[in-house]
Amino acid sequence: MEPSRLSRTHPRAITTKVEGLARVDGSARFAFGKTAALASISGPIEVRIAAELPSTATFEVLHRPLSNIPGTQSKVLASSIRAALLPSLILTQNPRTLVQLVVQSLGSKLCDALVASMVNASTLALLSAGSVPMRSVVCAVAVGRTKDGAFVVDPSEDDVGLLQASGCFAFAFGQAADEARCVWTNWRSLDGASFSEKDLSACRKLGWEAAQEVRTHIHGLVGEGEPDEEMEEEVRD
Image 1 (tube, one colour):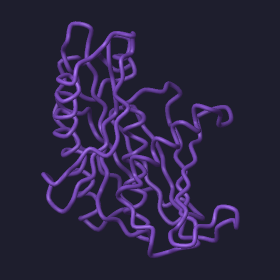
Image 2 (image 1 turned 90 degrees about the horizontal axis):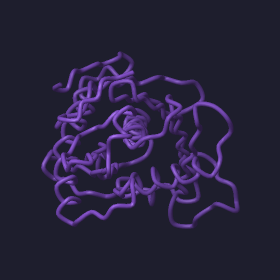
Image 3 (image 1 turned 60 degrees about the horizontal axis):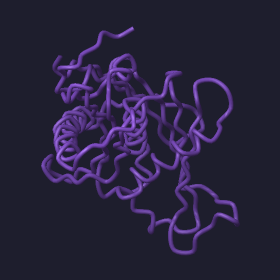
Image 4 (image 1 turned 90 degrees about the vertical axis):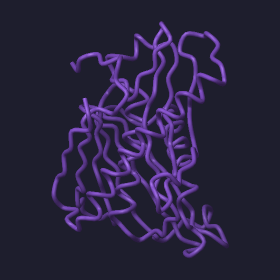
């Protein structure tokens, strides 16, 4: 069990590893603390005729839970991850093909930090594969608001019960770290209470600042040219 860190304004320790799984073009693991996810990318590959698109590649995302078979929740997660990543991909260069992303939860308890880990693992897998052109790099971080109105970056599974509102924020980064826009969020109230636009803006800003740390970490890993080695970094306590 990870300690509650409700004064946190930076992510927990980030751990990344490019896995090198067999029969895929790229794969990677990403974790905030103990909240981890694994992603693999295949493509462009042959696509089923029913899913073929004449002017672009088909981008398919599948989610696999740690245990049991995928259900409705997995379909919703896959749709969310697809929505977060789609703006960063250039799919028009490989029409009538399939780009398939498979994301696996490495934790049994779903939380926004796990969703963020899945998005970041997917980004790293895409960068590792290098087979799908990208216009930007998507990095995600969870942000929560406690019942006393305080904000916390990257709340752990154990923090969720203390939150009144929570969400994952995904940002697409260009060449410069400050060239980023929010491409997806699932910010919502957890107890039915209302929240203001001011709260949403404050959380989005915190998420953007924390996502820059994720971007810096991923850039350092990919830029070193040693994707097969594990890289672990303590990103401010």
